[in-house]
Image (cartoon, rainbow, N blue to C red; front, side):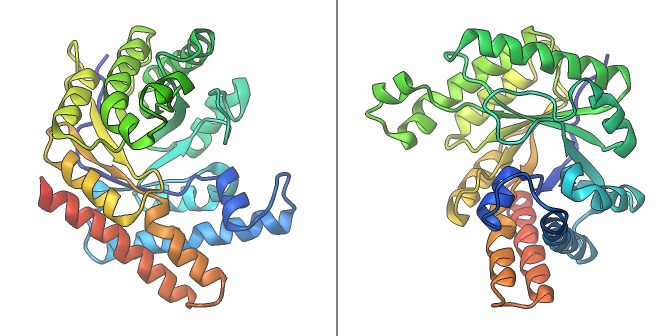
Length: 302
C-alpha cells in the first residue's frame, strides 16, 4: 500500500462549525434554516476569495479548500466540478474526543462528495488519558483502513493540547510548552498513531518555532518507508506575524509541503463585511490577497 502526498499543498480551511456559528454570529446550536443559510452564504464569500486568488495566478494544482458538508455542500460540489483540491472533515465539531460526524455511515458521505482528502481533527496528548487515546486510535484506524481500501487520501490534523501537569512543570506558560514540550509530544503521538494502524497521507501540524523540531516531525511522519508522507503547517487562528514565522520556518524543511491557514486569512474580512464596514467584493478581495500572501511567503522561503 503506497501512502503519502508530497506535492505542494496550500489549503484555505473554513470547515469551522461550532466556532463559526458561535464566534462569528453569536449563535448556539441547533440553528434555524435561516441561520444555516446565512453561515453557508458567509462561507461562499471565503470560497469566492479562494477562487479569485487562483484566477489571479496561484497554481490550481497546489490550491485546496477544506470545508464542511453541513454548510458547504454546494461549495464542495462546485470545487470538485472545477477540479480544485478539496478536503472535507469527518469529525464531530468541537469535541475533545474524536468521533465520526455521521457515525458508522461515514463512508457514504465520503463517497457522495468524493473529496481529494478526508480530514480529521484530533486532540491527542500521549501523556494524557490512555483509554481516551486508545478509543480514538481505534476509530481513526477504521477510517484509515477504509480510505486506503478505497484509494482515498487521509489528512490528519493533530492537536496536542497540554495536560495540566505538563503546563505546571513550565510555570503555566503556554509559549514555553509550545517551544519546549509540544514538538517531542507530537513526534510521540505520530509514532503511537502509526503503530495503531493510522496511516495519514498528510499530517496537519500546529506551528513549530524551531527548524530542528520541524525536521524531527517530518522524520516521524516519514519513518519506516513512509517517505512520500507530507506535513502542512496550520495557523491555529494566530496573528499574522506568528503565522508568518511558522510558515517561513516550515517552508525551509523538506517534507513540509504547504500550509492550512484559515481564520487568519478570512476572519477580519468577513467580520468587517458582516458589520457593513466593507462591501462583499472588498471582503472577497481581502481574503484573496491574504491567501496569496501565504502562498508567496511559503514559496519564497523554500
